[in-house]
Image (cartoon, rainbow, N blue to C red):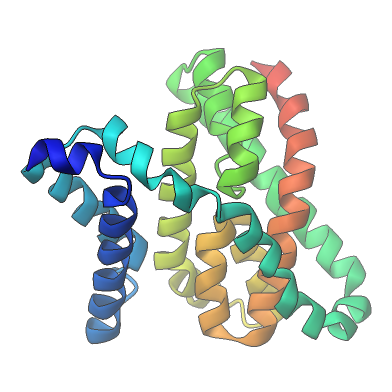
Length: 230
């Protein structure tokens, strides 16, 4: 059985999709942000690999086809943005400043924590792209000399955490403007957070989609500069 699963071309894809479907069903049942579908699917996949005795390399070989969908999925987020194009034009200045504030907050917080916990350069640059989408973050980490696999894990954790606490944070700080909510979620929690923004509203989802693309591009530049600070 183990040999069959290890050599299977579709095992990784099937177990990943099945885990996510189960996660969605659990989320719909309990209606709580704590039951994030992606987080649940990660736990299910890990449990399945341990139970079946399948190593990560074998799983990744058959699941890598899902990774090919990352870039087109990110590009598709431009659709809700196009639908809110007039709103974007009217609030262009606020949008630009909001995205820049989000990017700087992310980079500065990583730098401060790196000094606080005594991280070395490799560990520091590994964390710099934590708030941008995986497709871009992996390239940034590799280019700066970071540990790509840890970067991916950090990006996922950041997104899942943002997805879970986004609404709570907005309520605590009384952020009610849909543009501000969308930009905050998009610049801090990338695509996974944008899924939550789209649940909140169309404007929030559109602004979050914009924030993903722009913050991703600007973080490439910003991370290259901040990499020299440690």
